[in-house]
Image (cartoon, helix red, strand yellow):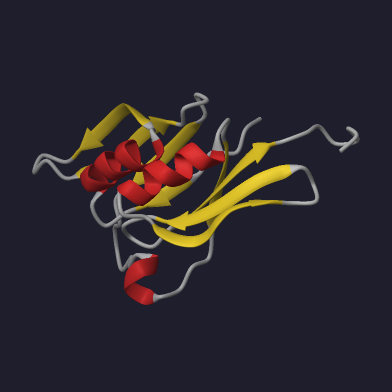
Length: 131
């Protein structure tokens, strides 16, 4: 069983472009209405893990528009510094820059173009390893 982040966007086609440029995600498939508006898309992280995107529907408002966030996606990566630099070039807002944790992780958090929070972590050592 796997948990897959499913993130809603006001403009899914724009989100696909942004996530590709900022985080190196690759598009696997997209589904659109007759008018061309994308209502569902599936992307893969550089590690091959899935991330789903959905159109807004109903009374949805992005976190950036409301200033309220209720979820965050956490993605394991091989190089936090590289992801952070790439995201910055794409215009991500820095929540906190790459930082080492006592748990042996290097982490950073950024916000995307619609205000969704993305947390990236890189394992520096295995739990129980000597420092």
